[in-house]
Image: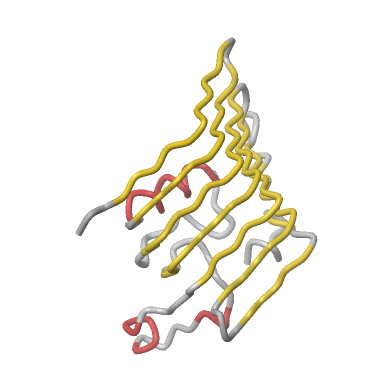
Length: 158
C-alpha cells in the first residue's frame, strides 16, 4: 500500500521466504503534508525472522495482501543503515539502527495513506515492544544546534 500510494520508493526489493526476510535498498518515504512535510531515507532496510500472529490468521487476515499502517509486525531483527529523518528544521541521522525482538500488535491507524507520517509513526511506537535496540553514530541537527552520539543501546532483561 505504501508503494502503490507513492509514499514509499525503493531501488531494489529482495524477499527470502526460507529466511522470512525482506531487504529494501535505497528506501525513501516522503510526505509533503504541510507544514514542511517529512522525509525518511535509508540506504538499506532489512527485516528478518518475520512471523504472522496466529490470531490474525484465525481472523482471516494474511500478510499476502500487503502491509498497511495498523497491521501487526513480528520480527526477530530489524536493521536500518544510513537512516535519515528530516522535517522542517530538524534532521536526524543514524548510521545504523538495529532492533531485536520486535512486536507491533494490530493498532488503530489514522488512514491509508496517513494524514501525517510522523503522527502515524507515533501511534505505532505507543504499541511497539522491543527486546533490544542499538544506535550507532546518531546525530540530530537543526534549530541552531545539534547533538552527536557515537552509539548507545538498550536491552530489556526478562
